[in-house]
Length: 335
Image (cartoon, rainbow, N blue to C red; front, side, top):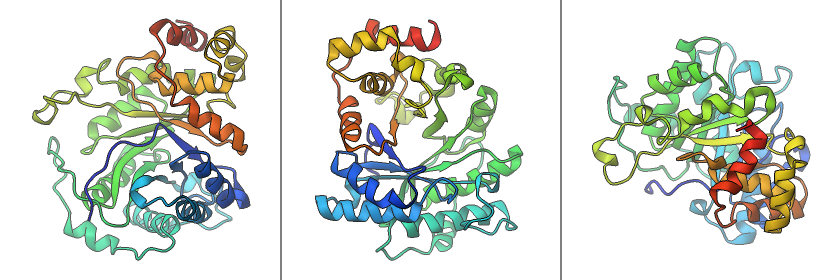
């Protein structure tokens, strides 16, 4: 077993809608500087099996080990699956069995040459009491693991959603997953309830960043321990290190924001910084959108190698000053 390593990369390569080119494009993204991927055990939009092959070939070509890369995938409920295609679990099984089966498929896909551990045995071996207020002690990682495992979207009821979340917590307890999180949660009340009920708090919230959802304006403050200190109280473990919030992973960042890309504020910073408009938007996101304490991670799914390289360079920019960040915030949020 290995110990829990550091935080995720500042940018992940999004693998949705890559179809038969998935392995090729993942390999190419790593050649251009990406070191992490986002995928899902859902054939409708992803080829998780080909993601694993692309990562494997890229690691061999670049001499990368497992600790050098970040693998993020998702459990997708049946309403997000293509019922005509392969589904990584029995839809008639209970929620817990669905999560376990889907997770096993993800391990197989993303570690194509590895010997897999006995997942159910480990879940029993490392089972912990899920009482409210109980403190989770991070377990050492297994040799085969997922860095970040997301709940692709909540189920139709809170009890069912929490049942699935308990299994995801157990995967962390067993050292099979480093961090867990949610995707496609746009209602601040629903997010706050899920956060409160979780024994192991979500590490990630991945949402579509778009005007139709208000660019998550009412949610973002909840993700920051600075702006929402009551959600992240100081504990004995956080006296030295301030509590971290939830990492925000916006997707559709360029595709859904053409108006922003053509705005005066982006054009002005593009000229001043020597960046493309897309790089300006990515840099803005990677620097926390100017919100105190907000941790972010950029997702880019471009198929163009030049744009892949530009995206990686954008998240490596020197920090901007407050007014530069505020100028884009005004275009996005009207502030």
